[in-house]
Amino acid sequence: MSILTTYVQKEQQLKQLQEELDRLKNDDRLKAELQFKDKLEALMREFDKSAADVIKLLAPQPTASKTASTTSTGRPKRKLKIYKNPNTGEVVETRGGNQKTLKAWKDEYGAETVEGWLMKTED
Image (cartoon, rainbow, N blue to C red; front, side, top):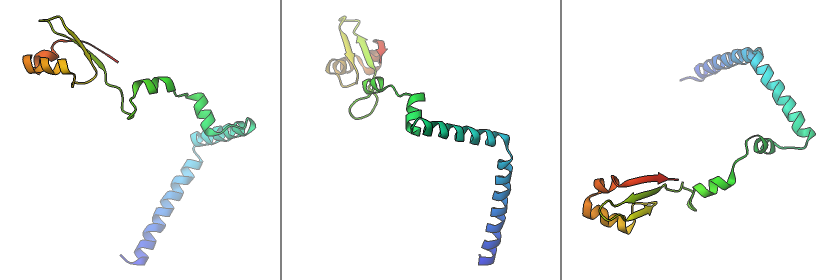
């Protein structure tokens, strides 16, 4: 591709972008948003607040529930599963499938059967 062809293409792209920009400048929605932004920035300066302060104020993040629902690795905590063996009446509560009694039951009765013994799941 020659430099002249590239130049002409870029010139056409620039013309298209300029037309889009002109259309946006005449859009009432854009004018309203720009006015809102200007007023918000003025208010933030008046009260000496940053954008982060405003976001924190309008959409606070619950810190306690986040730490409770994740582990130290950052992944969500597994749900607590409660199984009850109908043969012995024994109950097992586990958050993973690597629980000793649960593994023994699965070896003896089969994984599908033991999953049928799931009584309830909790967070």
